[in-house]
Image (tube, rainbow over all chains, first blue to last red; front, side):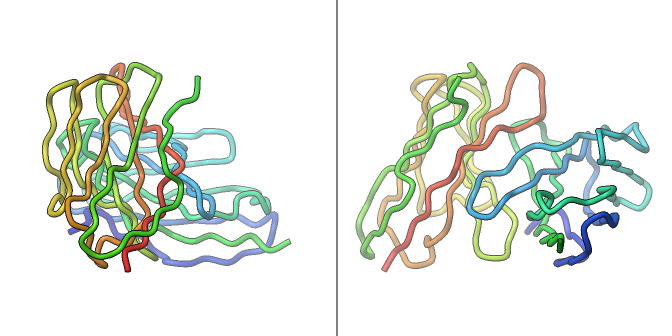
Length: 112
Length: 112
């Protein structure tokens, strides 16, 4: 069974708006990552947040982590058409770097 | 660096046939993994390796074999293809103390 569940499953917004995606997981973790997947391509790593961190920024990305609620959110500010992709959260489920457990993903569409 | 490469990109098999999906990385990563992605789903771990000569099962290992004779290569073998194995297969690697996984472009497999 998959560790993470993402919400919403699909999100469509206008260019320039902010996009927020949420991820919930089931077990204790060492860290949580977010990946992007463009249609028909492999996944690309976006950002990692450790279990002792609450918030992390990278460019237009902001990730929060609430270990008490076993949840994380990814905020993309000032969205662009090129941000159209599927976004996945992944946790190590306490195992290690070699075994990631992925959520089902949020499909984000940015309308020009 | 080429990163993670996978061959072939597309493959069609008949039920009962066997084949090997190739994966190679040139980043000297100790960890390598195979995932499958079904439509509208996240990735599920099939097998993984923590170093040459060491492999272990993931979430969905049945019907697949792996071996790791070198650091660079991690082939995935389908023993007797079934329609349920129709999927997109991704190979990934990580190492050097990082949790960030680098993904290959994927192999789209159809079993008829």
